[in-house]
Figure (cartoon, rainbow, N blue to C red):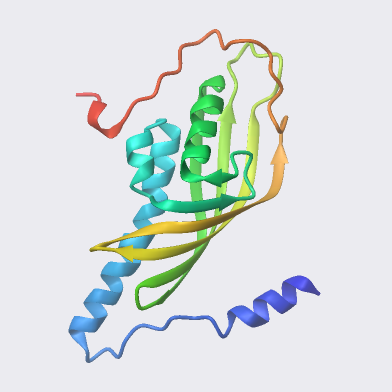
Length: 183
């Protein structure tokens, strides 16, 4: 019942493009959509590389994040990620389906994401796969967009969640950012 009600409500939340004969408005609309979609690629890269500077370019400084293990302010969220991600040998976040609705200088985006959290080959616990749904409110900041509120909902998981403490990881996973690309 709840899903059908949500689907019915979403039919009335679309943000259609401007008329095709209004080239300037169409280009602006397409640019905004591309900037908004890019936020999620930037987010995945920042999280998987533990690049906190890049991660801060995704969120507004006053962002509120709910529904994750690092719930609260942006600083709380980043501190939690920095503390938890190095325990995994690697992570990979993948953006799947995405719904974008824009109205002026605000937007709503719902994204379905898979987060792979790989353990070392000799780890006593299994790797973790998380299926997540992000519901984000965004605002325009200058010529770009930022997430001002994120609600994360876990849809499913395979593997231990939350990850149990099994000691310090034997492998040195370090943060690396976009400024440290391999030559």
